[in-house]
Length: 589
Image (cartoon, rainbow, N blue to C red; front, top):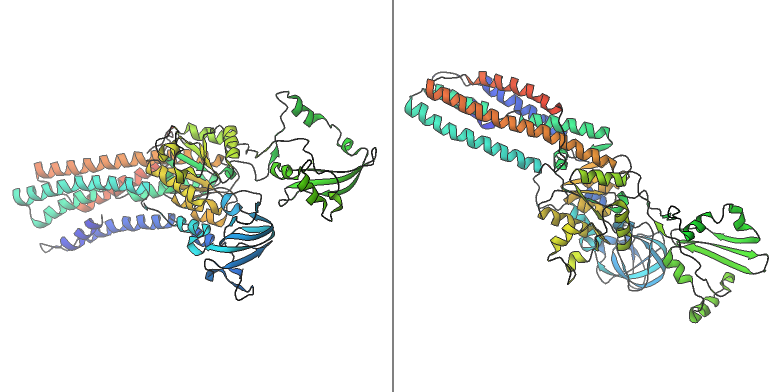
């Protein structure tokens, strides 16, 4: 259309006639409207790279000349000695050389809610928070070479910046231009060489093909359709930050989700089952109908509540019937197992050498095990089933342990074909049924123990296999994969990094909104498909009809008349954006 406007204003001033100003204005005005609508609708919220890079602490305690001054963490170099304690943020990637009862919160990158214990020789990564103890470490990497730095660099990395919608429009535009260009060449030869048309009359007929054949209202129709779709998604608590993501969501074939987006919270619940009449489960749940019976005949001396550092709770009490002093503790399995020191002579002796009066005795004895699990959101399983009904395969990608991922996958109905993240580097296990890593990724129901670069690699490989991927997440650890995915979705409560990298931001808990976010774009795609088919048929009709009239009857048409007809026709076609259609049950790609 820009070419038609230039022809109307520059080449149509021959034979003592002024340029076609009315045609020029009539063409430029719709183009200006199209550009204005597109500019208004397109917006991007947040800055994921800045959110990631602002996370690490700007200061660090570093050993220099025998002292420990506080310096800018940006000037640290490998082999420097750094120190951090409870409440500090690890300034850079390092290996601990001295660790005193250290626990590190790794939720920023792994999504795990509980701190992880560190000992000498263990790596500590920048951006993690020290929850307990103090440590010294040797710097092994800084800046963009740290785990956080690599995550930030992945956020802005994208091999293909052209959206799926732009590719479709480019193909349609190419088709229209080929058809119009072919008939323009034929008209020039027939009208000027054959019929000896005057310069101005022949140019008017050429403008008729340019104006009538090019779907001038296509950008407006698509922008209005997408804007209406964005408003509909907003009613379902999904805020669109990239307008073309609506159409791309209609073509999604695989949805990758972090486990934290599938579970109700980061807190675990007891797995106490009574439906199967199991005698042990029934006994645990129903043994104490009256809670007061638990305190009968004892005198409570001390109570330590559960906390995220010790990961256990403990009471010390005096048993009145025997006069004995007893202590009972419960907590995470690994922690409790380490405390069961009965019959471990050396450990017991070391334990008794402490000044803690409660250390007297014969150590802890394991008396029971209660299973715990991450409770699912009430709507999560239905959401997964609905996604499968729309032809979207759901894969879970989490930083949690493999066993936890498998159990969560089984309860969700995703399956338990989960693999550790190390296979992404090492490849399929020798002797397995998979001949390549891509084949394993396609078969997998999910991956466990992943870091940001693993999530990014999974999405990238799935895209390389021809799939359009959507990614959900809520933390900085999800931002790189969100940036890479065709459609990125930040769930309710997501960090600034995740929201900044996302195309769609959910404003209410759960993933049920994603079902609406998939169904809505399927409807929108049908609207756009209907219009593009109509636009292509109009192009063929106008080009062929006006060319036949010019060739057979030597008709000469005023371009402005054709422009008015086209604008009125396209104005009526805008109603296709709110037409009633049925969404497809499979990807529209």
